[in-house]
Image (cartoon, rainbow, N blue to C red; front, top):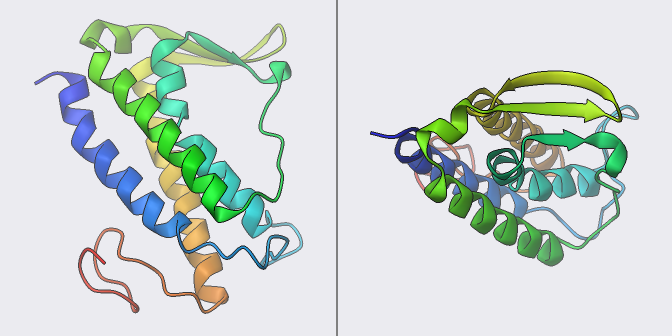
Length: 165
């Protein structure tokens, strides 16, 4: 089994769960945050929508320079974020499908201008991105709970939903 073949079922499951969480983000409270040091709910939702494309970026490029422009946060509506999310998932999934095992052994670097912040094999960075997205999705479920919005099933039942929503 190739790395891509082993990654695809997990990717599909994580993206489906993330989409169910994003669908619940309310449009009427974009600046709400649980703590002054926290992201607003709109910014966290925008991050989740964007992160779905990071796997594809890693597979198809060898670096990302943060000085070249990053995520400019705005208070986008949930419908718009879901469109971005869906397009990013489609692009990342295609990159996974088309990648060969050797592609994952290529080093990928995160840079800030000329400064290299980290360099690791793509397979490691892809795995980290999947974990990173799951982490922020978990944050969003806390936001939803605090706003009394039903939390969808992710890895199993929640207090609001049974298996599989």
